[in-house]
Image (tube, rainbow, N blue to C red; front, top):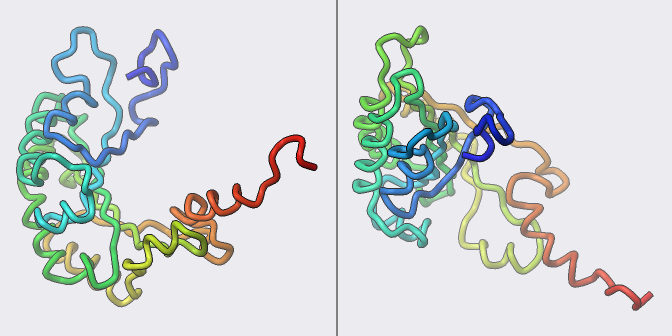
Length: 210
């Protein structure tokens, strides 16, 4: 809210995207300022879903309190409270090799998103798209260090699996993209800098020690 508040930073809502795992169904309404008096224009919203299946999502997102169906209900209610032209959503989905990157998971995701697409639908939208974009994010391994060892149970999916997942969603009418990978050659892609930072700090001498 501070970023889009004209009395403070004054950024355009279209220039700000807030990403959340949404631990509870009420989180969506709070982030969009639903029910607040004189609330600034809401930012764009990105939901880190990663799995439509309740048990798998609980495993991948242990901080989530509510089940995916309950979160979806809260999301749809929040979107319905917005003007039609602001009913847009990015669904972030990290693809994990052999975990959530199969065609069955793609079918499940497409079916899960149908009510959200209906909530975002704007008959006046020139593109005729649903307003819901699924952003597929192929997993990057952690490079080296302790954080990488903790994440060793996950691996990056093959490009064949990524392409098949995207194609299946498109067949089901889902608007979908794949995040471009940058920096993997020198272990600076998404998630890899975080994994190596603690390791680097341990080798950094404290002030006054050199």
